[in-house]
Length: 178
Image 1 (cartoon, one colour):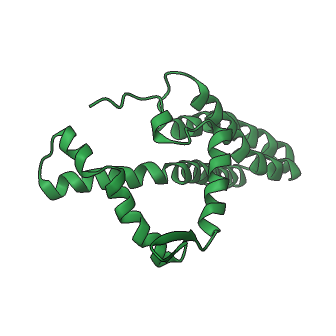
Image 2: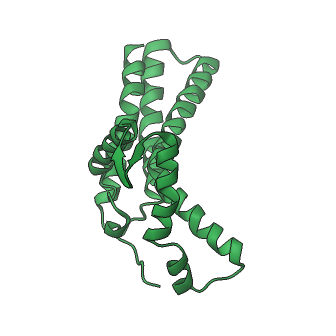
Image 3: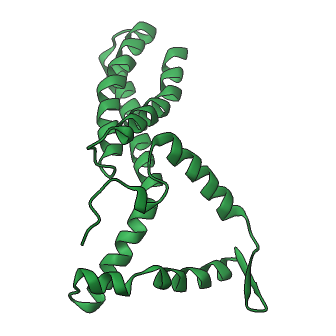
């Protein structure tokens, strides 16, 4: 049984190592890499689970199928969590861009860049950060007030570095020309 628990503890690490390898490989799609890593993890880890299960519990078909189903659910929840955590920032940006187009009906790429630029982003974010208590304003100047978001950002930055995910969109390797 210890082998199965160890495999379940190692599975997210294997998933992250595969993702880090994919993210450092030229020509891969950063948005697809979490799923590709999940595919490879699903090729590698379930056979190991089956081996450990048979060795530990025997080959009773019902127990084997139930155990494998539970392991696959666990592994694919790890895949989903891996994808979810590291695409939140992309999804937020995508939604904002799509909402700009939806509000206007149609936009040229140039007018979209004009409508959704750094000034627009800051104009939306600063009031939210003030409302959340992360910033405070005194005499027209902004000061840090809460540090929980900064701690979360530091953890995310470290994880993104380890996994080889660009820290800033401008460092991503994709065609950003309009």
